[in-house]
Structure formats: structure tokens, C-alpha cells
Length: 447
Length: 165
Image (cartoon, rainbow over all chains, first blue to last red; front, side, top):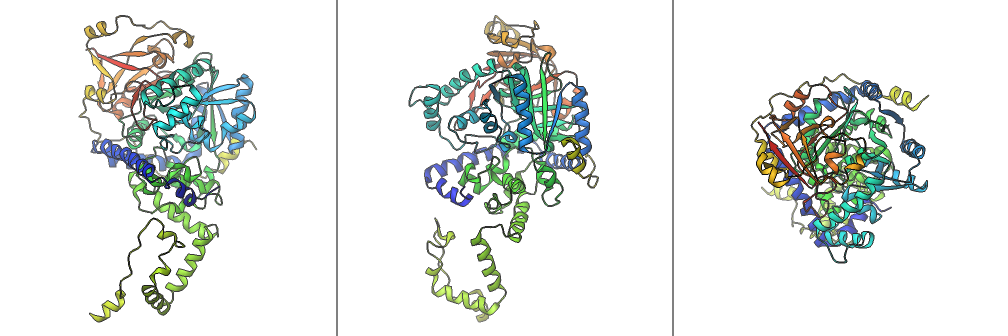
């Protein structure tokens, strides 16, 4: 697996495409700004949402129990999974009991986190992803590059070619309207035939035992309402205390994500329909560990709007796949090291720490500070890339010795080519400024 | 120990941070019709509806969602609309089957009551009043191909709203 920096290098090799990716996401960020500024109470809403999440996380155990009790009373079956393997085994057990070999799934980053599709494929069960963007990347044997816009790394020509290969659309046709219609017809067949549907969960309400799923396409509903068995998979942090809290979160979610006023469908599943089985799988997978760490527990407030992706100068110019995890972007970079520190040690460094992520976050997660905390922890544990460890040690040594620092400064002012060469990663794609003839100290002494 | 007990025992109750309560001070100055336009819905008069969709499926309940796959136009009654975002609250009691508003090709919703914002919407709902309910704002849509907005992804291809007094 390549590190973020190595993968990004490949991504930016196509300068034109990089610019397009950058501008497309900035356009989404601009829509978010416009939608949020319409509401004078926007900042108060963010603060309110943040406080609800803080309160929920402080009482998570009690709210989970309350949610479970209500959901059971509503006729929903509740399952608990400690990790990805247990989650997948539970889901597989439910599907196996039903006897289905093909099923439909709407967007769920949690099932990506658990690699559910691969797990089920090994057991002879095919998962058809029904979100258009997810279906596109599934055809291409890729993973989503963005949690809200899964195929944002692709151009319409790419999608046209993919659909030509998999759906038999005419070669060269790249009209989004036409391609979407082809996907509609293709997936409608799966919706009508599937006996099992898997969905994610945006919010689960402890007070009522209901859960809310938001989509624009209607794919979660098409799947869930036609299937005999509906399995909803959620992380334990998706709980909110009260039904009225949904007002706050639904106002923030779509505006932050895409600049929409609200998603087209905000479906409230309270009871299974007559004759239907409804299951909820509650997953830990490291969330309790994160919760117990005061530095990182705030990351569990995330409502997966991806505003931090769209605003991030590094994400926009490196693409989601460079993050080599299902949840990319700034939020992914603080969530992933908790799941596997060693494998994700590069991610907290994939940031300029500019803080824009924290500023747009609808639930006020201090994302850029947590990136910085992770850097410190990873360095202390010796997990940071070797070049960084050595570099930092050399810097610390020099900065602690004023005479050496002054000598070094004078030396490199004379021989700046020793720094401005291809062995210095900062020199790549950058014209380094010429070093001034004298240092600030020399100049100051003369005054 | 079961996973459930294990998870619950591991979660530590931390400093008690209070729930902030209901959100106060939300804007109320929104135009429902304007919001409907933003979310891609069309508003027509009852007379215009007759011209646009003379044949419409109404309420007959069914337990067979698949039987609705050929429904061209479905007309249902919404409980109320939300001015800030053009969403309309619907419950399954109002339609033939849960899948109905999604599987039909074109959807018509009658609305007679409007609340200003989402806070007012949930206040009006109070407790849960249905096994399934949703806020629906506009026709099914996607922008997954190069951010080009396409109406009619998997759900209804169009939403027509009739505001009846």
C-alpha cells in the first residue's frame, strides 16, 4: 500500500484533472457556504448540535440501552457487534437464514469500514450497491473516493465507458441524463427482485427507537420497502437522544454536505412493515476506545457530511483514494489511526493544519487539532515515517544550538542549491524562493 | 460475556454534559413555494393538475409493493409542508404501501398546512405517529456523474404539489 504522499503523486501527475477535481469540490464547498449563510442562526445551530453530541457521548451507554429497549418494543431485532468480523458474521447469518444470493445495499460507510461486500462475496452472496456513485465505482472494482460523492474522482467519459462495458450503453455516450436512466433501469430490476436490503443509518433516536436514513436518489427506500428483510447497520455513535434533535441535525446535514436545503428523502423507520423483518446491527469496532480518549473522543460527533473533505486543500488536490481508507479526508485522517495506528500513520500528516475543516464542521469537531495530536502521538510511538523522525531530530538538535543554527543559516544562504534539489520533497512542484543575502539577525544588528 | 454486555460495560459514563434543550430563535421567514422550486418540485392548481395528470392512483392499500411497479402517477395527501426547505411530512397511512411514493413514476402530493421550519415540524409531530414516515423534498435526484444534476434517479421522476386551502 502506498502512503498518502506516494498515492497523491500519482493523482496529481495529471495536472488538468487535478485542477478539475479541486474546482469541482470547491464548487460544492461554495454551495455549502451559500446554503448556510441563508440562516442567521447557523452558528447557533452548529453549537447546539455540538452540545447535543457532547451530551450523547457522555451518556452513550444509557442512550444505547434506551434505544435498544424502544427498538425491540417496536418489533425491530437488535444485534451488537464488537468488531468488523462479528458485524459481518451477524449480517451473513441473517442473509443465510433468508437464503438470498443477491441483495441490494444503499450507502453505508460502515459496511465499507467492515469490508462487508468482500466478506459476503467469499460466501457466495453478491451485494449490489444501489447509490449511483457507489454502483459506478463497484463496476470499476474501486472504492468510493468521497463519503457523499463516491464517484467524484471520475469524469463522465469514465462513467460512459464503464456503463458501456457493464450495462451495454452505446460506446462514447457520456450524457449524465442518459447514463443515469440506464442505471435506473438496471437497478430497478434489482430492487424488484431483492429479498434482502441493507441500508446505513444517519441518526438513531433513543427516545423512540426509530432510525433515520437520508438519500437523494431514493435507493435506500426502494430497497428497504420491497425487501422481506431490512438490515440497517450503524456505528454506536449514531445515537441522538430525542426526536426533536433531528430538526437540528437535518437542517445542518444537507446544507453542510451539498448545499441542499434538505436531502430529498429523510425516512424515519419506526417499525417493520407488515410481514417484514427489520434488523439493526450496532457496531463498536474501536469506537469505545476512541471515546475513552479525551483527545480524540470528539471525532465521534461526526455526522458524515463531508464538508471537511470539500474544503480541504489537501483532499481536493490529492483525491480520496490517496487516503487508502473508506473514510478519506480530514475526518478520516483522525478516525483511521484509531482503528490501525501503524497502517494509517501517514494520514494525520496529509494536512496543512490550516483549520478550515474545523471551521466548516457542523458539529464543531476540532479536526485540525486532533490531526496535530495524532502527529505527536505517532512521533512519540515511533510510527511516523522515518524521514520525518530523522528530520525532526536534526531540526531539534540544530534549533537547540544557536551557534550551529546561525552557522547553518549562513552556510545554506551561500549554497542554496544544496536544499533546492530533487532530494528535498518540498522542492517538488515548487519554485523555492532565493535565500536573502543576509539573515534577519544580521539586518537587525545593523539598525 | 455477550458482546452487548461487553460493549455496555466498556463505555464509561463521563462528565455529565447537559442536553441543550430545544433550539430557540430559529428563523421563520420562509416561502414554501420558493423552497419547493429550489428542491425541484412544481406547484399547480387543482385545475392544472386535472390537465397534467388526468389519471392518478389514489389510496387503495396493498401488501404487495411489487404490484405498484407499473403505477404511473400516484396522488397522496401530505400532513404538512415545511417552508424552509420544501419538505413535506408523509406517513405510510396516507399511501398504498411504503414503497409507493418511491416506485411510482410521478408523484402528486396535496398539502394544506405549512409550518415555518424543521423545529416547528417536529414540535407539530410530537411523538411517533406511524411505523414509517418521511420528509420528502422534491423528486428523486442525483449528481453522482460529474456533479451534473439529474432528476429521476431511482424514485419518482417528478413531484407535483397542490396547495389546497
